[in-house]
Length: 264
Image (tube, rainbow, N blue to C red; front, top):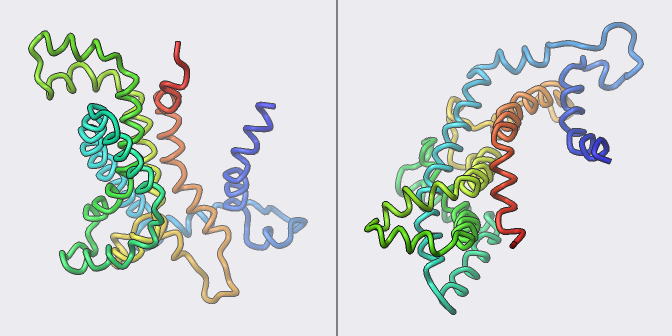
């Protein structure tokens, strides 16, 4: 059963890997004579101008800036929300759920006007502002649930020791929220890494394109010529950093997402 689940999960990536290593003729004629395997698709992607690694770097910069900004804002918001009681906490939480579910497409015109008025176009770090704003509701909800799982006695003891709010967060609460912070950060990172529509409208310079936009611009000479091999190679290369990140952080991700699921 585990093998079936693993194959089901890795199937799309393995298919993309296979497609990226096949010659174009082998994609349409599986029984083609001769060696069907080639690295030409990867050479085509990596020899572009700007180089493919530039797009990876752009997406990494945007995703890291978004994750850092989101966590810096979400932690105090989540702590403050957890300290509230009654209808206020319930109402704010319901508002955050609605904001997290709000369709992003309805914000495009407003975001374009903001980019035009404040000169934020073609600025990679500026992309982290709308990304963080869109990720903040879900991040606050996840971290508020993590704060709710911490024993109240811990903070009471810290108060008795004379620690102020900043010291309590830094030395007592945040170390215990490591798994929740890691899982929330990974979710924010993945969302900003894969975001397409806002980056498409805010970024026009080729050297500043993020990875999803750069991959979408890989095309043939006409609509009847689609470079499946190059698309697959770019997809595989773009997925490697995410796979490495998830493999390294899989333990805190699972721990953070399941935190509070079982009460003893």
